[in-house]
Amino acid sequence: MSQIWMLGRYNRIRQERNTLREQFHDRDTYRQAQLFKSMIDSVPECVKLQQRDGTIERINATGLSLLETDDPARIVGKSVYSVIAPEYHQAYREMTESVFAGNAGSMEFELITFGGRRRWLETHAVPLRDSGGHIQSALAIIRDIEERRQMSYQLEVQRNRLQTIIESEPECVKLQDRDGTILEINPAGLRLLNATDPSQVIGKTVYTFINNEYHTAYQQLTDEVFSAATPRSMEFEITGINNVHRWVETHAAPLLDNAGNVTALLAITRDIDDRKQSEERIHQQHAELAHVCRLSTIGELATGLAHELNQPLCAISSYAESAVLLNARPYGNDPAKVEQILQKIVCQTERANNILQHLRDFVRKKTPKSQPNQARALIEDMIEFIEPERRRQGIKIDLECDEQLPDILVDRVQIEQVILNLITNAIQAITQSENAQKQLSIKLSATPHNVTISVRDYADGVPEEIRSNLFTPFITTKAQGLGIGLALSHSIAEAHGGQLWYEPKNPGSLFSLRLPCKEQHV
Image (cartoon, rainbow, N blue to C red):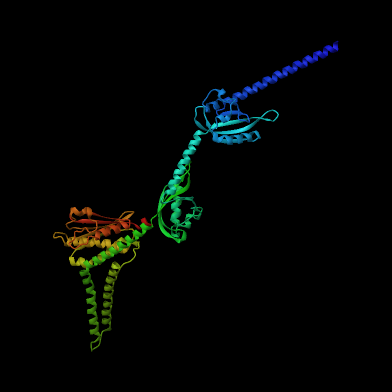
């Protein structure tokens, strides 16, 4: 009996223990289920469980919000394909099959909400396995990417619009890096370089096409754009495909990233070859006009110059006759005296030669060339040049000059032409006035950056009605004047980076010529 009782007692205890174990297991499973549900519901993105055929087992509150509902019954137990846009069904089925094969999957698709609106979503799905390792469901985390897709769309629209503008731009648009490598170029740029295919240009350096003498200046421009992040521009010559040469003008600006760093140089380059040729023709015409003006000035000074040349020629003739007579004396000649006379002939010959040489330099045609010159030396040369006319008219010239004047970088003949024009105008104004003082003042002054040459007469002055047009071609106060001298002088001054202007004085007129110092051109 005792053994039977003991066996029954053991069986009861074992049964109670198994019952307790099952209760604890169920309680732990329930706790885990509740914890899992709480985690899903608290996630700020859509979380759902889905079967292989697409049936939704569970979805959190965020997922319901994406569907524009708060009732789980509207989607739980239903197919996910009922809310996915039809054009994405096949791709979604393929992703689902891949997940149930044990792989992770992701894709973007459009959702159709219960309100009938479309919304872009991105899903990341993984297989959910039971304790035995068998795949029971697909766990998917889905986020709303509608805003991102809209931004991407807008960026794509802007990119396409910009690309269309660049490709249709009639001027060259290119991107290059700091080393000069061409990253992108539009069709107009290819045409500018006579290229037929982008591969002929993209990946190559700009220095392949820029003429050698402009390499240093262009490298400096590039460095400044990348270092200072400021726009720059310059003109230079290029040699395109098939050895075609042309002048271009480029405007370069920095291309910045979101952090403000310069990532590339954006350049808009235009063909200015026609403009350069026109400028060259105008320059040649300007030089021709200047030459005509110099000849006209010499014509006006012809009387004085003839007298100036006549003096040494008469002296040479007289000295030569004296030498002949001394040499023919029957009672013997005086070698020392003959030598002295011959020396005088040499001096007078040099004097005449200097006058002629100065005339030749002044009237000859030549290509303008800027070189360092002393402003005072230019003035003194022109005063010497005008000396015969000055004496003939009985005019006194006063020269006032600062002690130390910096050199000016100018074309000597052109600036001498301007100075001579101002001096002869002043002399003519004095001679045409009955009450004018026979006096002319020339003053040279300097600042750290400029030298100013001022010429003043004490005549009647310029009539007020023509002062505003004084530097306009064919405006003149002279009875026989052409009206091109001051206009030409004004152009020459500006071409040298200087300025020529007029100021009325009481009495007389003041013309001032300002020219940059040599250092300003270096």
